[in-house]
Image (cartoon, rainbow, N blue to C red; front, side, top):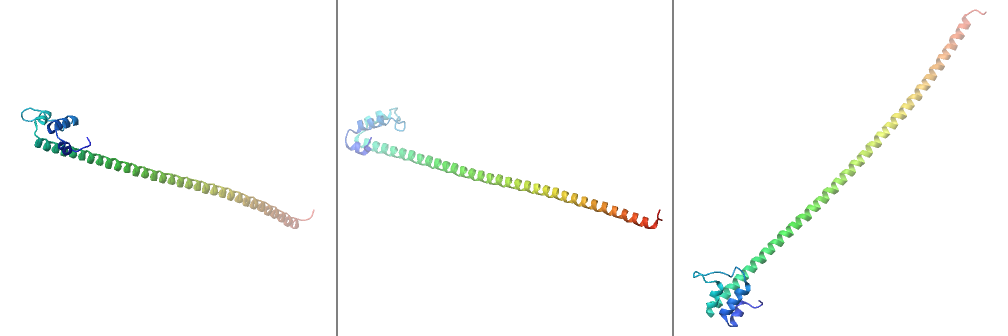
Length: 167
């Protein structure tokens, strides 16, 4: 429409202008019936100049209020959408942090398992080495025992040979 209702009214043709304006807007907001059953278009056509100006100003005010209400609703919707977007971003960031934490915990658990496996392998190797050492010690002791037994037998034979008469 481009011009205000007051500017249009000042241009003249009040009744026609108000009827045209109401018809042009076509909104149920501006369509009504008075107590006599006349529609808003019929009432607008019968208006005098001052009534038309008042009606146009009233119409302009209702249009402004309606536009302001729609603007406020759009702003509320934008704020809700922005808040929801921020919540989604925060949720995604929390999920990323949780995923990094789970990955770090999994990495630490894997390192712990590897360390424990190395410790078990080292203990097993140490036990095997100890077994070999003990086996070697047992062999050396057995050989020493055999030599001692043989030496003892030789001493016994020598003592026997000295004690027994020749021949």
